Length: 327
Image (tube, rainbow, N blue to C red; front, side, top):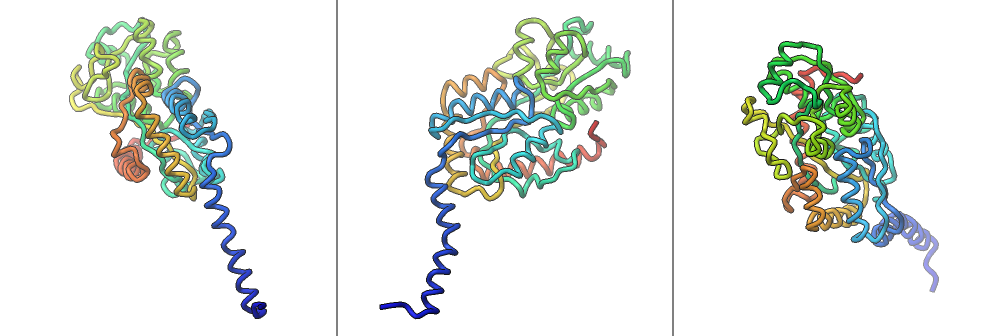
């Protein structure tokens, strides 16, 4: 028996309207069916890049697809963020990093909170204050005294302009009453390379780039920027214990997808990231890089979203007050 004309039309219309939703569910169920790209907003060799590659190597096993790292430098990581914010929300383009500080300095064509889906909170790390091997001072107090005696004569780096390393560098100058020229770099590794070559005097560096050179004796280490020493560098004191009580600055890494990525896909990516962070070899590798992995209850998308909001509320007023502008 045929349906009346009107009922037949409504039946077809309902079926057509359901197609996009059905298609979205099908994509989520078959995900991933091709390689996934993790965009990193820093040069090769720095903490973001190295952590991304460590995670990618393990995540490809649980996801069953290649996970590729793409380095997109510039704008303190904000260009990488834009690349992902405007990507298709299908789970094949992710961004790894910590865009909090630079996002308030550069004019963005996307919303840091509303244009991404949190995937997983990964690791946190301190910075290491290091100097060229020929720096006259042998400890933190000696370094501060030398900088005060030579205002504006030294050159210092802290990674990308507006990044957390830059903020840590400003804090150091403010707390010690010293002044030196800030030299922006596209990542921590190029800055350390210039430090080893004696082209600059100081670097507030991530441990990934600095510690191998400290261990090789090619640069000097004056302190860690958190209140506890690094297990991977127990001989390096903290700035807190070396003469700057209360000095405590750290950075962190998270993983995001474009806004609108299906929840099924976010769940698969989160499970893959958590799986990677639980592997003993991955944990040992990250620890060797000076990274501390967040506990399991903080590795969820909700935890990353809440942590990101808290960091914005903490840092943005301080950055505004510092009057940092892009160069």
